[in-house]
Image 1 (cartoon, rainbow, N blue to C red):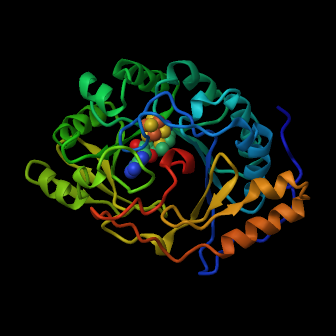
Image 2: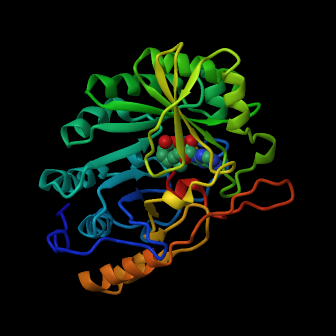
Length: 342
Ligand code: SAM
Ligand code: SF4
């Protein structure tokens, strides 16, 4: 694919929303498809989007590059599973030019790890330094059940390949009350023993997924209390502008993050927006607000038109979100995490 280079060289004022927050971080979902079917993320029989609705790699490059031109310093490629998108390495290669020019600090991805044995080395060669790998358990049978058919060995092999290629790996695990809560200390010990950070995530009510999520919701405040009965946790003063809070675990010598969108409000410092694989810009993960950038570019927009549409969308970024898990309610946000990108 040919890189789109129109916008980046322009000297643009920063992207600031209506509440004075500067947007410096863009997550880009490159596909809604995936080779796994995690129970909290997808329905067993998903209907995926027709190809024509999904942005081409050139369109993804154009929009992401426009954001870089507007001061975004960090790009995270996600999905669906980003590494199942055909030609995705071409996108990494093209976006890598912004690392080389110094316009971008970080190009990274969130992956389920199944394809890393193939892609870890090329990713490292293209300038990716750190990746997030989602892994909820070390028990092969439980992994198969939670992902509806996944092979744990592939993911472990992928993580080893990533470390072998010099990538810094962080493990993301969704905390499920009955699903994997009992397994989490073992997962954390294992990861810390290999120099991997772990971040635990509360389940979020996004999209219809067949299972009743209220039964699986586990408050991380509760989980932390439980960990403190056998570990010494020390709060760390680091923040990423996101919802994660970090602690050091004295006994394992590793770092543990807690992402608690349901129990805490972290919106005041939010510096990020999300682009779906269909070109919809969501300026807040937990709200239905949306701007259709695909329509803008497919209508033949100039770079200035695209920039104006992005500024308009960011200006309207909501103050905060309103996630709630209650038995009676439908998902707070109807779209799946796999469309928005986690
Ligand atoms: N397929 C890649 C992966 O699994 O890492 C990237 C996309 S996935 C949607 C991104 C993250 O969202 C994963 O860590 C996943 O565990 C998380 N996720 C998916 N559905 C979720 C939900 N309902 N609540 C909380 N996290 C969720
Ligand atoms: Fe696929 Fe990631 Fe969703 Fe699991 S969490 S189904 S790996 S997109």
